[in-house]
Amino acid sequence: MKYTPSVVQRTASYAARLLQARDVLPAASSNLRTANFKRADVLIDVSRMAGYLFPKFGPQAHNPLQRVCETYVRSHSSAATISHLVDEIAKFRPNCLAESLFGTNDATLYPLTELEPLVRLEPWTNSVRTLSGYLGQRKHTFGAVSLELAEREARRLCGTVDSAQQFGYRPEAFKRGFIRGYFLLRNDDYRFIVTDGMHRLAALAALGVDQVRIRTSETVPAIVDCASAGEWPHVRSGFCSLDLSLRMAGRYFD
Image (cartoon, rainbow, N blue to C red; front, side, top):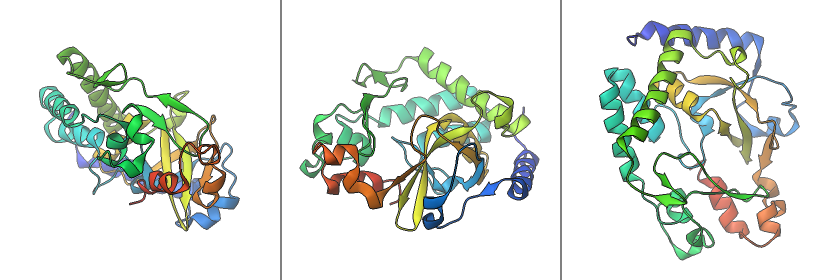
């Protein structure tokens, strides 16, 4: 299916109608601290949404998933999409978690400098776990990507874009249709950290959609507040310093 601006216009019109029917998130995070997100649909700006490894989406973002989807939107070519995907993976070869998140292994980022590059560590949670399913992954590190794997991931991204173009974003139509995550608050600002739906978000952002309806995760707290950083599990345990923990939160905002 060829990309046409009318698809995005229809999607934008759909989002505009939701403004009257659903909760609209205020710009200031001060109102979020008293919000009840249980079973609520919230419409928020794509530019305020973030992923773990690649934290920004939207027109000014340099997000590899979004860029690959944009290639498909422009070219509608699977070959061009695969080629771009392989190039993006080749650029990302961190040796430790500090390099994954900050692009450096500076000693001030300890213990991130001692952790594998695909560990998911968020000081505000209790867990330290290894990400799985990353295309360039070889056990806990990185290696060459086979064409078969690249084609499989490219087909997934292309299919997600095609679906968004043809049908729009219809989260109610599927059991796990909503993009989900939690809110990270810092002063009077916030980011929505996506835990489920990264490919859908990348496709919608590539199509120029600037607001997306979300729900909070059912498995993690809906709100994490930097004002309470001293109480975060990995800060209290001493595994991460308060300064490092706030830097890790800050990368979503800076």
